[in-house]
Length: 320
Image 1 (tube, rainbow, N blue to C red):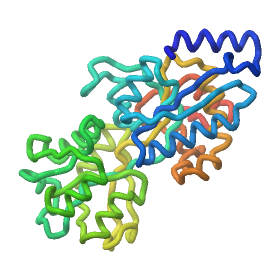
Image 2: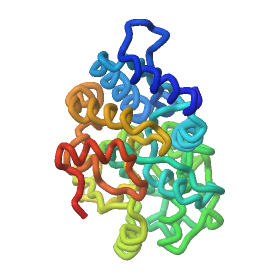
Image 3: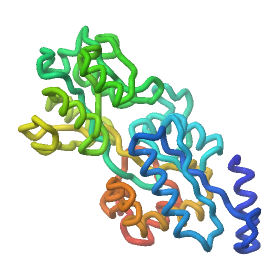
């Protein structure tokens, strides 16, 4: 339903009060990603928790599998989705109209969720020791059209490389592990919530080298982009990982909506999820990110007025 039509239904409900008539229910759809990843599970959990805690609002909340962040942002702007999960790095460029985004998109953050800790990995016997060694190699850079270039390209640039320096292979994380195993790829960019299933799988089949970011490049990325943050992977997280890895959060998962979304609805949605965070955790551990210190963290995408209103009300909005 387009935003204008949806808002007309909302205004009717506000004026008339809630009703048991199904025709007067407000339908909210949460865009997620393809099944198999954390976005799909966490997005579904958020929709379920919102639905189960908002009966008095006559809401009908459901999750919808999508192709991921880029589709979600476009469909939010079109009014086909009311809320969605997105990678903060991709949202960062979308709101600025940079990269593949030809015009600024009016996406707004509702809450910052779990970090996405990603890195280049390679078989230990590949001869690849540094990111500079990726030159001339076959490197998996994520599914075609998924938007991974929004965070991989800055990482490469900070290390003096670009996509033109190697052969990019487009594949899912599960597919990337298979390509590493049979020698069809020399390295792959893998990540997500820690521990990441694809990295666990890769380490279970053969010895894996975690290609390090240079300290200079990490600092430059964190200083230049608000969606990058330092994130260490503790020693022993993965099989064969004997030392802590100085990693990067390459863009938090976050819950987003369109700037045009009604402030009261965003306020109520934020309230229902934040105050019932333990119900999200019960469905996926990433729900632990719904805490006072994390949900309001700035990743470069402006927050929606309805979310800000709630966070100020409970006293966790930064006073900067």
